[in-house]
Length: 273
Image 1 (cartoon, rainbow, N blue to C red):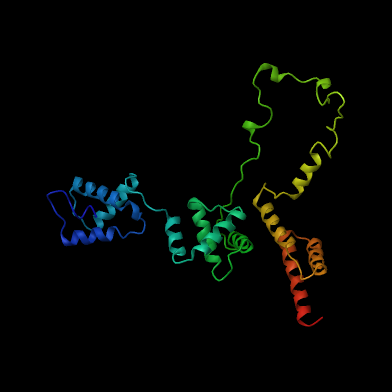
Image 2: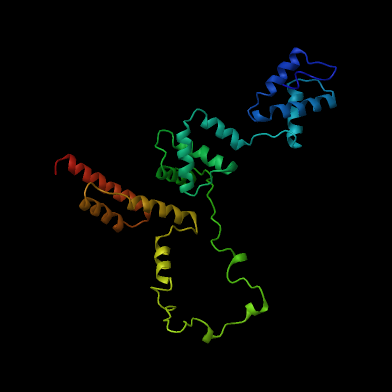
């Protein structure tokens, strides 16, 4: 450390060296910033001429971090490092991917809080999208833990919505005779939903995932899980999906009903029926 090998006339004694080594074991410090942090600390101590011990170093850390000279890890970073220590990388990658699918924030301090809470819930459970979603709902609803959800930007923001005028002529209303008029020998399909895109847009709207609020998104995810349930044969799949389609209460209820029907079919096979 730069502060141990001083370039000043005064040197560190054994007690001061031990205090400084203990200082740099603080988990809130970034290891990659150690050299810069040591130089900043040395300048601070030399300028004020204080006795170097645990108390003075704690005050120095407070002053230097408040001044932005030394950067400290956030509470969320410290907690995430503690709970994820020793976890296999493929588990952490699966958690990130599942959170993105569920529209959970996975970056920044909010993302680290989400990941730390979910990783605790998922101990002993498979890291799947459905388990992550169930965990987020359980933590926020049953445990009162704050869960951070993504807010999707508007597909067509007001600043770019509609026609972009470039001249006074652009503000002129087009005459009815000038609009929707096909060229010679051509037939207009402007009012035909099959050809003007209205039919395709409606199909896409019905198939698309809701984006207005988190609960609608949750329901959509559960319903996709429910629609993915199948049996061994086509007739068994039809039987499961019939239960899914007839179950009220939203996507999660439909999924649980479909899983129950799958288990009934499996039990029938086990009994040789």
